[in-house]
Length: 111
Image (cartoon, rainbow, N blue to C red; front, top):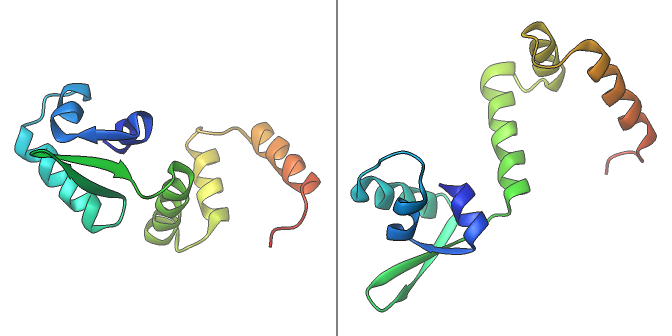
């Protein structure tokens, strides 16, 4: 759902319901939007009788936050264990990993 919110900028539950690629009930869409709002991902304004939602969090920041949660939950907070898992599962090959390592080595040190 957030993909549609980010893409459109501002969206009502009805617009979001029509934009989704799978059938959901109106109540389900509204529940998810309320939960996203409670978590700080979206906010709403009232226009007439409609709630209009917009993102409060940039897509990149939300992605980084999600990756941190996955690292903590499944890899004990270890990015290295995640990368080894990606290689073991064939989702990234060792040469891609070496290329990524070279690219990162050329970047300035992280803050």
